[in-house]
Image (cartoon, rainbow, N blue to C red; front, side, top):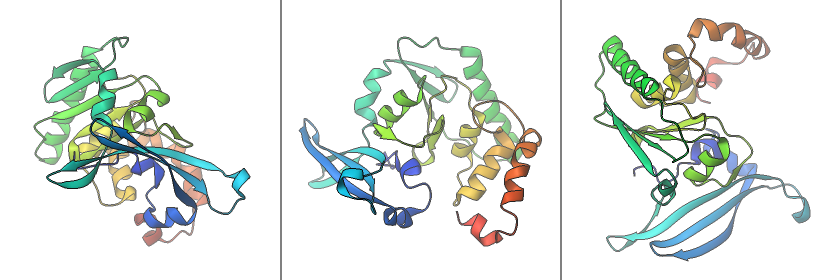
Length: 232
């Protein structure tokens, strides 16, 4: 996979190196496995005493040799054994667990939504999209290599690898599908486009329905410079 760390979106919260000024990475363990080594890292509040550390997240990645060099990889391949069922619907390949009741009409709705975006914006579509279905936040974070995180949403994507991950147990998540089809360089643009075309969260909705909810937040942010908005 191009994205070796699926947890970065949530751990670094889009602020990159600035995040490390607030939360210090501490390696908890390096364990030998058949493929190489797993590296488990905790992110702790830097300005507290040792016995009063505040924990933000725990991250797990894999280190293994490739062409004679050590490289980092995400743990998704080793975790997908828990999603032992898969189903191909159009360009989507859905992965889900034994206990999940697969909803094919919703899956076909994802295909139709994807085709409609391609038609509306005249954009090419990826040949394949992997859709990973879990039924709760705990299952999702474990799948991505994040045993613990204080802040996690019900959906995320890896646009580089055409992968969608959801904790809501639904085969239709238009907001996250939009992130795959139209990746953007800033979170401001990315979330704006995804909300415009796919609504907010996994509940179906429109931009018009989201505006009344966003208005109070916009009032609180009155006076914030535009360049601050588009770079965060």
